[in-house]
Length: 78
Image 1 (cartoon, rainbow, N blue to C red):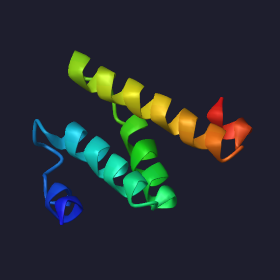
Image 2 (cartoon, rainbow, N blue to C red):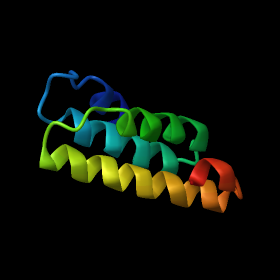
Image 3 (tube, rainbow, N blue to C red):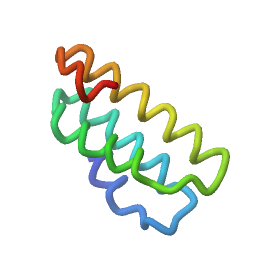
Image 4 (cartoon, rainbow, N blue to C red):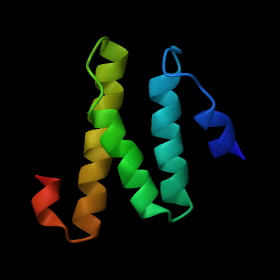
């Protein structure tokens, strides 16, 4: 239910970055790894427009690296 609510947040909202990150983490928690990876990739492709977004992008990169490491997918983890 939370994922459905987060998906409704507009990409112009101040909370969009956090919504994407929380959606990614929620999918990861539900073992929807492929979907979570898609969300993390979407986050890291966002342009850096603020310090807050920079932090979210950095966290998404780090989390994505951990996921790839756990999956033994070392090439994409670079």
